[in-house]
Length: 110
Image (cartoon, rainbow, N blue to C red; front, side):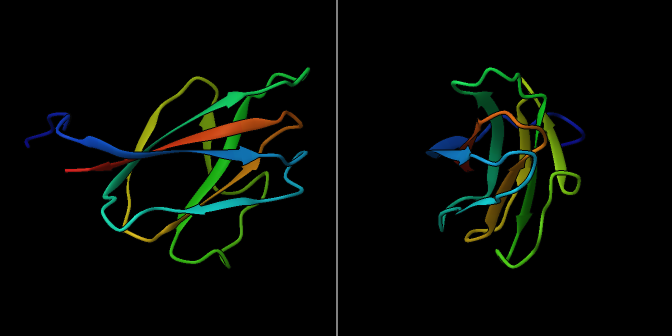
């Protein structure tokens, strides 16, 4: 592709993963489908008096891999990020602060 941004993806599924932790107390986990080759991640705050600043996330082969409110990838508010993924991998998310948020996961395929 020579550095060009690849836009030839189609959305095959969309999930809302509730991130109901308070400062990383609980981890939320979901798996992606058998045809998924990439994911777009974005999060939104729902019914919270505290504005969320970010969500921590981890893409891995096993839910046994750990993530906390200070480890894993950081997805800031109002940001969409695309990641390559292997079918069946797990996505874990945990709040980086005390807000309640949804991590929107759009599964993509070619």
